[in-house]
Length: 457
Image (cartoon, rainbow, N blue to C red; front, side, top):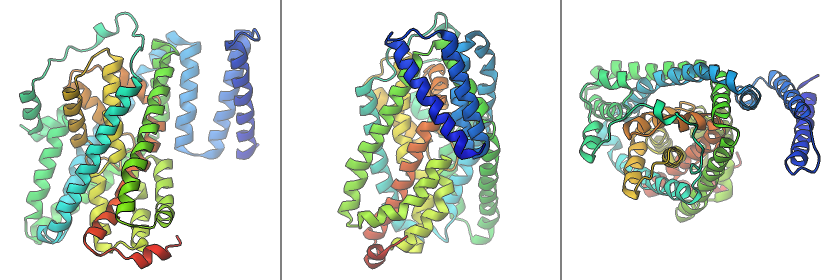
């Protein structure tokens, strides 16, 4: 057996299982439950064998989702014991967020020769980033309100009673919460927004220091960021267990029907991201008059890397290299792309606004448009600086849900399909940032049209 043969066997078993389930669900043929169960577990064995040959973390995560669904279906009582695995995974991911936010924001702001040198590109970049991410936020809110993907989830008796009682917050409380009272306290409690504000101010202050005094702290921040990226890679080896356990608990507790809502959420996200690409990023590319076909060639490899690894950071070196070949000056690439990875997360912003409203819908909480916008803007701020961390948006979502008094159990349901959503939103993050470098280069009058027209990849 090899990867090809196990892949063929898995595909064949999946096809047979799908046909048998269709016949069974429409009552065309009475299929014994034992036959269905045997086919499901045979598929799991084949998929596991394929994952062994594939040696891909993403493959193992997808296989673990299938295993989790089956455990939830066949052993609903036992599946609840697996909750500890998903909680361990979430705790490990939470440990990353504060240091990675601090390090990436400080390096992004202070990692240049002087504030005067980058001032002009800085305000242009930030202006463009915030306009585009705000549009992404709005598209996400519109999409989830139209689809209503979170509505109609049947919550088991007593589940809401187990949720913590969170005090409602007024608008003054929300604004006050933005500003850190104590940095260590914010890190301890996982309050993301105060960490962001502190890191931004710290980065500006560091940038104003002479190079001799700035260099040690900047090197420390760069080293801290690299360590946390490696730390995240280690954590992700536990992801198949955490994700599989999360979806097993969800299916075992809420029933298989919840997958219908999750699938609806997944489709909503993909449609919203496609709408964003076609109605926002494509017109921007046409307005600045870049050759679309060659641009697609230039970004195809970094986007593929981001899609496969679910981390924008992994695609950064290739994206920077290709953008320079495409006609964007190196000084603009080296500023806009890393800064964009902190401030211009189009896909993540769209996803977070969509997912937050999904959580409220699942909990039966009717948010006003104003409340949705405030929550979306909070998410847009708190998502800054996490492009290099796979699935860190879950942590952002958890923190925001707690801040706005939303329950956490719908987020645990989302965790089961987050891998599939992360692939799409991370790819859009990379597309948005590579296009942003072209926008700033054109705005500065330094875009090389000849290089762009002759780009071959």
